[in-house]
Length: 306
Image 1 (tube, rainbow, N blue to C red):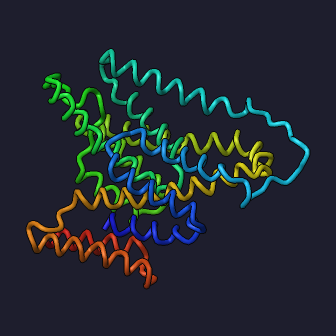
Image 2 (tube, rainbow, N blue to C red; image 1 turned 90 degrees about the horizontal axis):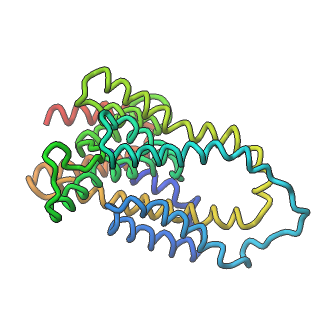
């Protein structure tokens, strides 16, 4: 069902983001790169950056209109960057020095970073969280095993681990509750600390909620005053064109990667059931007015029955 929602989001955003040849190329390259390099955490910001640069290589489609330069007060933007750098510094120090109870610090940094770098809303956030909390830990453990550095007490080398099935559950349930899709960060934060007890799990939910929405709040408060100046420059619009195309490619590549981890063949009846649920979710969303929470409840009941 979660995959069906991702496919639907991709279909709905396609006509908005893909309008010309260069955006088609960016989308295709980013989709392939995302699928092949999904385990690498740098791939998402790198593709977004390259997408913005690519559409700025030509100035013919969106030329710059001559205008008087405006002064931009960048100091309003500093707090956002200070928190970003400070959280990253302490998270890495806590991991390397193996601080006791360091998980909340790492969780805040992981979630704040994703909230800062994500483009395209919750549809892109979910695959990024899936990579960070479910795919990357397994990749780290596999690398440690290959190097003979496995620590029985910490096989993931300080990387937060959330079970794949739990992530699938969160990606589906978030559609059945009111509010933005970003609220999946609250669920993920709680699941990341569930092994420490109920009090820590509640703390994880709070950390996930604050860390995912804090970048947006800071951007609204401090970045909005300079946005009306920046949007006068054609380079900004050209960058957004490439970024939107890159986000489309990331969504497509992520969808296929997540589909790879779901059983489609064995056992045969389960594979057919999974395929039916994915396609029916997409078709209901496109061609009917059935609310998303109703679909979620229906598929939860279906999963319970089978």
